[in-house]
Image (cartoon, rainbow, N blue to C red; front, side, top):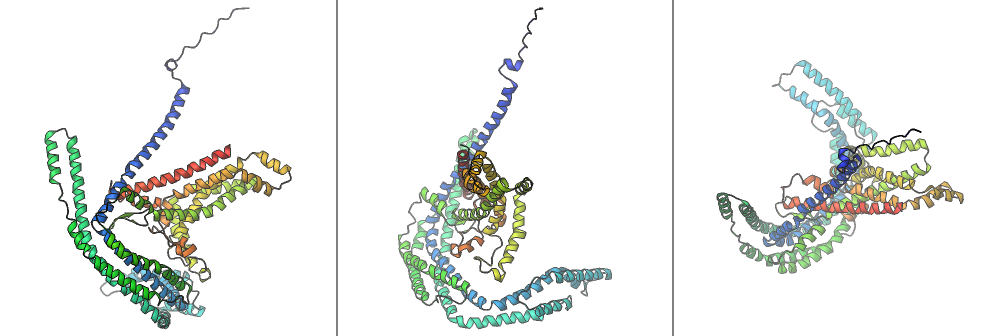
Length: 635
């Protein structure tokens, strides 16, 4: 047998000699990508903390200026003045709700007739104005132009008459007569049709009849309103003096900041001449210490007057509260009156405490850093860009985000999980091939498009439905604002359904088939197997789907910015379920709205970064909790 020489080994490639190979290169590529992701995340967190944590010392200084300038002292009285104005507003709303409720029929008739005429005028008005302007003696339009304008006017007139709004409170004869009057009137006529004028007169006469039985209530409200005039004048006088002091302190702070910047630049300058110039400029920008004690002493001289005014208002409010009726004939008026009665003891209690608060106030009391932190976390006001004082309280934003999330999850959880159970357990192959792509396609819709849909379609339809008399029993109806918590929550529910559906369906699908087979072997039906075996086994995964859906909702920006109404105020929870139809603002919306408009490095700028840190922490906790449930399900 011939001897075969063994094949010589292939020479090692140059990269392999040096310890490299294609496999190692691929591993290094993916490892570097993972490492880069970690580095980027660390840089983001570092940047957020660097910009955000500088907010609290700056806010502490603003609160110090707020105190030493005397603004805090004025706000002791301003708080009671604001409460007085709010109660007065509630009483006035109750008064007019009683009047309008008792003559609601006449009001609806007048409003519907005016709305019909206005809808016609809105469509035909521009062309009519062109015809009138070109028919003036000083104009010289061509006959063809006037003919075309009149033809267009007739077309728009026909279109307007065919799209007139409904008038359920007018009889068919009245509606037809109103339509005939606007159809037959001259195009240059400007007066209202006779029926509109007569209905307006009828409504005015009905209001006059309702005013007489409420004369005593009107007198009581006017008396209470005038009782706060002295306090209003006093607050206005004190405001001017403390504002001037605050401006002087802020100007000195700006000069001091500039001086420190110049000294820091001088310490880093290498050229001795340049260093001397910077030091000279720093000494030139040294601000004089503003006089604080003089204006504060003048302000403290008003203490007796402030105490006397508050005592007078308390006595007047205590006597007036007994003159208010306990109820009225209209439900809305009665509810508002109850709100006023509930606020009255709190108002009197604050007036009782105010003299002691005024006497105890001292502008030399230091403002610790903890006050700035607690004011931010528990503050009820987010006021920026004002001439008086900026306040950064996160509660209104957190309340708005939470309430929108409640609406969204209330709608999305049953829909998403229900669809996942049906598709995975009961649907046929054909139904699965139809339902799953449709639900997942929702994720492809841009959020800004959903925002436009919410503004132009959904919000408008919802507001129009709330005006129907048959739906007035629903809390919060009729809706005052079409952009509100409920509208934003509905759109966010639509956006979160695909997330909840996909993850819940995967969780159900990952349940071992042996569970279902064992249940069926014991005689369980398909429904029993699904709800007593499959769903409990997949519960951790379903809960993770809900949490990730919550994270999707809480982090959404564009929809809430467009649709939520952007009112920075804690919702009025005395409205019950009607609270969900009020406008609000959110954590994400305030960042998107204000970050591009604030000065770089300002306290306001850093406050938005603190909001971002809190939002980042909330979403991180939600996602970490969701992944924990996912891991538990896998185990």
